[in-house]
Image 1 (tube, one colour):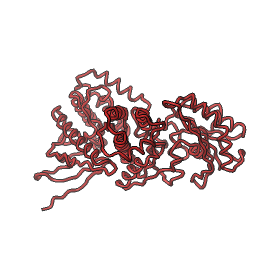
Image 2 (spheres, one colour; image 1 turned 45 degrees about the horizontal axis):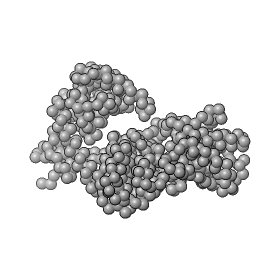
Image 3 (cartoon, chains in turn purple, cyan; image 1 turned 180 degrees about the horizontal axis):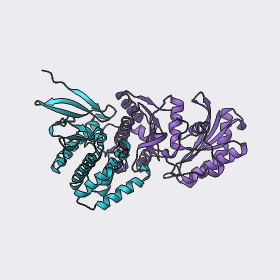
Image 4 (cartoon, chains in turn red, cyan; image 1 turned 90 degrees about the vertical axis):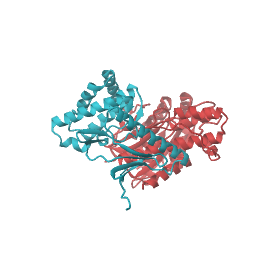
Length: 330
Length: 209
């Protein structure tokens, strides 16, 4: 079965084409463009305009890369939420137009669930606890009682958002994660920062303020980045371990843009090893937002019998992970 | 003679070791070092949490709530040595009780929680697994997620955790939490309606729906 997916929840617009290879996801096409704000953070309308401008070309390119005719695609999937309204509506409009013109079924996909499913589809893990870390989202997700449930999450800002805000404050470009990671490698001295965990939840705004104050006081930018990474990632690893102990699972999966960070990966891997669990992370290009994960999740949903009429394909900016009826895992 | 020590429980953060101390049966709660954390941060966290937990247990005792006796605290090793409680976990006890016994046990649990709250203490993880019934009294263990906090929000969350625990572990006895709240009401010194409203609000929040 062939599926095409369109992702457009925030700054990335992407199109993916995938095929079901006996339960594993085979990627046939993976194309994307990223909106870069001239200054500051993401402007939702500007990002949506960017997506609208690039989508026709990306869809064409995806078909070329996959080397398939548009008519061969059996389902058209799109990111239904959560995300920025204008971006979601742009991606959904493109998906509806494509599905209607090809006469193919349409399916809306939960973006957070897609991050988990692409991990299961490409890394070989079966029933993991997912640490999903990106700009807007920070959640610890696991399958329980027929749903993907959120066992822990941020109480204030997403971890990527925390890194971006700090980066912007220190004059780094958006997104700041990669630059912070490079600078952190040259860090030598750890400065104390707030480490906020409540049960299985985390919070970062206090740490952000404290880090900005260190920078103002003249602490080397390398040491600020190093200390922030060590503290923030340790807190994320700790809540992930708590969730694993709580739900009794022995696989851990990373997802989201921040999962590209090598230090975070090594911490979660060490944690997994210490408790005799297995560690999984998809390819970098499948950690960041991408159309492939939408195509793959849409394929799973369609095969399990999920059907959606165009009239019911409203986007949902606050689409919660645990609202999805996970029919394909029974 | 070599001392016999045995790990009886391994959580995400700590291991619980059965041992002896000056001839008495004890358990040691040892917060284990985490290899993924920077050693200096790891040490700071484990020492801080050990100290906070011991302090909270002491404060709870002063507030009139039964907790294990602390015999020793080894900060550098992040270990608390406390008396071994020879009794039954409330989680296993509840299904074995008559309706009246269960009612009075729940009432007593509520009274104890109110004593904690009256003194600005939050347990942080009130579940029936963290209560042990010994000699007619409910003892509270594992203050690892506790804090000193006088806000209604913290009290509401504290009680809500127990409410959730009852609904998942003891769903066949739906009245348990009501009995807890009756006991709580009889001892709580603040405005109990405020706490009740807070719990209702927490239930309505997306996360918990």
